[in-house]
Image: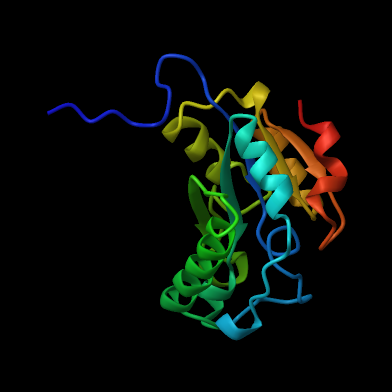
Length: 171
């Protein structure tokens, strides 16, 4: 039996990488440590449009609170499931969610914590992405830096800014 995937492995795919806090859920100014504090932002129509235009949607988020012991992998998984379920109700599917569990003060350096490009490079390889056709939307300079290092166009937004306001920047 041959399994056919939804990802084109002969031609390159394109993606929009998305930071999480301040882009997909409300920025609290510090770590979101509890599921009940995880408030999904209404970017449903904008992400649906990007998905309909052929972009894979991939989350890339630093989660140093794990290294600090402020929340658990289980709690993080519940937050991510809530995010996926809420967007799915609006026809939006996240292709993947990558997170960096490290924090330099607790676990040393790594290649996945933004501004390092590790999470984006992983997505580029795993989903056969063309970096030149892909974007990274984030609300911190480190997001743009990670995108640039991976060959992806970075788009800096303000925390909690509607993605619909920058759709014209994505070709």
